[in-house]
Every structure is written in structure tokens, then in C-alpha cells.
Image 1 (cartoon, rainbow, N blue to C red):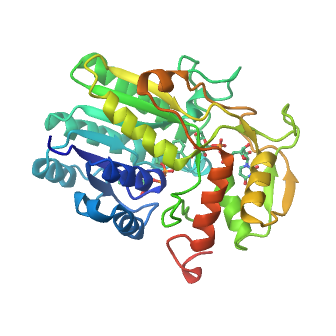
Image 2 (image 1 turned 180 degrees about the horizontal axis):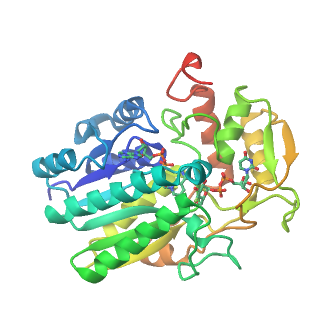
Length: 349
Ligand code: NAD
Ligand code: UFG
């Protein structure tokens, strides 16, 4: 059987690069489209290095998804079996300051992609949604049937794209769409060659912890110590990025199910971990002490969020394999080998 060819938008980014590697290792061909707005060509080169004999099954185009003509050309030259759509902006705070920038990039990018896919008869999509669509859940674990809401423009783009996909499927049952709601992806490939490299001051917990550990920042600020949790700090469902990447392969396989329409799945571990527990696990894995500053809650943060994993386990036949020890071990391996990510000390603040 000929290898399937998958278009991966945002494939140079954190989750995209790990997924592309798993695709190549799984015998797929992959074509990345990325404008490198929040990523680096070096990540793509590192993925090729890790893929060894499969490296020649990867190609990459520097392109903004909103460049319809450029995207048309790529679809005209290659027949794609499916698309995994990661490309988007993801910083919650920035989305509050620049909502139009977020709506323009995330919504228009997605609409152009869907239009070009339809025009070329490629109607299989896996989309990166987020647990952010559960808002502050009234109970946990979050099941896929929970009511949806958005607390900021970033979250609204996820919710809107989910709705666009549901409407698209209603209008044309030829589409097969899987919406994956990621919980909190952390860690890195065990090689330490690829990992997360955010621009500027990290918004998320583990990239910040990692920068404190390598001496780039003096201390971690803990946002909120008065939550109704075991130690007062917020609880999340952290998931190893390699497990998350494997979840995309499971979703691609599910797209072959003739009964699939537009379906949504949580990708999490089903376990909640507090900020302090995560910091402790990282300290154990790295042997580094993380200085802490206690602060007020961060506006918009939920108290406890973790996934129900039953649906993904039953229908995708997928389960996370790694726990927080492996997540922190691999995060530290990446950080200690690449203290400035894909750049150098001079190129970073
Ligand atoms: P990332 O920023 O590392 O990757 C996104 C990639 O998309 C980047 O390489 C960026 O350059 C590219 N991109 C952005 N806009 C583009 C455009 N218009 N055209 C072409 N390329 C564009 O982020 P990530 O953490 O890998 O996240 C991937 C996806 O998963 C995003 O859609 C994100 O919203 C979603 N998600 C991430 C998390 C998380 O915590 N990391 C959680 C839930 C959902
Ligand atoms: N936290 C700190 N200090 C920091 C950063 C985070 O204490 O410097 C705390 C937060 O208050 C929260 C926990 O660590 O309790 C996790 O925070 P993250 O910012 O890492 O993750 P969130 O759950 O807030 O949000 C992330 C992404 C969203 C996504 C969501 C669900 O940023 O885009 O996961 O997938 F929608």
C-alpha cells in the first residue's frame, strides 16, 4: 500500500514538530506548511535528523495559511490523504490585547484552508482544539459533552472553529473531521533535540519553570495559592507531548472509519496535578531548586481541569503512556541541552 501523505499546518511548532516525527516514524509522508511566526526552521531540520531513513518523506513550505494562492499551488502539486491543522496563535494574554490579530490569523487561516481542501477534494481533517473550551468546568473530569464557553479571544477562536467544522459537516457529509481537545502538553522528545521554544516571556507553567532552571529567569511566580485544592494551587491535566503526538496518529486512523462524521475527543491523561506538585516533580527530575514567588490568581484561570479519557480510549484506542516523572525528565533533558531553545543566548532575552 502506498504511504499516506499528510499536510501538517504549523508543523514546525511545538506539538506539530513532535507529531511530524511520529508520522514519519509511522511510515507516513508529511508536508509542513508554516510561516515560522512562532517557530524555527531548525526544528524541522532536527525532526529530519531524528527521522533517519524516513527524512526524505518530509518536505516543508514557508507559507502563511492565509496565502490562498500559495496554498492552492501546494494542493495542486500534491494529493493529500488528510490534513492535521495546528497552525494558529495561542497566547491567551496577547489575544485579549489584540483580538483582531487573533481572529484574523486563526479564523481566516482556517477558512482558507478548508476552502482549498474542499476545492481539491481533500475532506479529512484533524484539528487542534483545546480544553479551554470547557471554561471553568462545574465538575471534573471533563467529558466531551460538557457545556462549552470561551473566556478570551483565543478560546473563542477554538470554539468558533469547532462550530465551523460542525456546520461544514452538516452541509456536506463527505467531510470527516476530528476535533482534538488537548489538555496541557508538556515535556519534549526523549532525544532532547526538539521541544518547546516560546518567543519572549513564557505564558505557560513548564516553559517558565524550565527557564528558571537554566538561569534565564530568577523565580517562578505561582498564580494563586487559595484554590480549593490539596495545596491551594491550580490543578491541570499535564500530558507528555509524545503521547499527544501519538493521539494524532490514532485520530488519522479513526478518519478511515466509514461511520465517522465530525467527532470530538479529549487528549489528556485523566489525572490532575497541582502547580506545586509539578514543580516538585521537575526539581526531582532536574536536581535544580526552583525559587518561588507566591502571587494572586491569574485572571481567567480555572481551579481544577482534567480530562475524562474514556471516549478516546474506547473509540481511538489511544491512552497516554507517560506520567509527570517522564514529562519533567524529558523537559529537563531538552532544556539542559538547549537552554536557549533553537536560538542562542544573544538572540534571546
Ligand atoms: P506553536 O506556536 O508552537 O505552533 C503553531 C505553529 O503554527 C507555529 O509554528 C506557527 O509559526 C504556525 N502558524 C501560526 N499561524 C500561522 C499561519 N497563519 N500560517 C502558517 N503557520 C502559522 O503552538 P503549539 O503549542 O504547537 O500548538 C499547536 C496548536 O495546538 C495550536 O493551534 C494551539 O492553539 C493548539 N493548542 C496548544 C496547546 C498548548 O498548550 N501548547 C493547548 C491546546 C491547544
Ligand atoms: N501557572 C503559574 N505560574 C506561571 C504559569 C502558570 O502558577 O508562570 C499556573 C496557572 O495558574 C495554572 C497552571 O500553572 O494553574 C497551568 O497554567 P498554564 O498557563 O501552563 O496552562 P493553562 O491551563 O492555564 O492553559 C493552557 C494553555 C491554553 C489552553 C489550556 C488548555 O495556555 O491555551 O492550557 O489546553 F487552552
